[in-house]
View 1: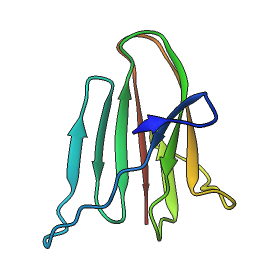
View 2 (view 1 turned 180 degrees about the vertical axis):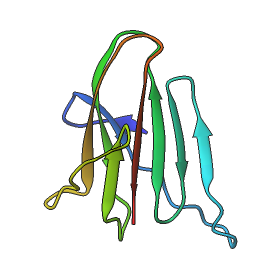
View 3 (view 1 turned 120 degrees about the vertical axis):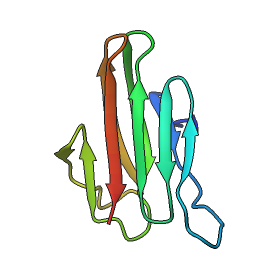
Length: 100
């Protein structure tokens, strides 16, 4: 996780786990929960305050689908980053997933 160079949000670019089992890895922070493996990134953004921001989710190699709050979204063709707009009130959540 790092600030987006665009200045409007966060870049979410988990490194695939380097383990023999290929088991997913989870990072659970107060505002963001991420679970990922070599082919998937799943997350939940949890608004602690009124939140208007953008997440840039790194698209894993081989990914062909993405959803935001269960609705399909189009993967970018000219960028490795899927922009996910966040506009939430305190206590609300936004789920996202990118994978094959």
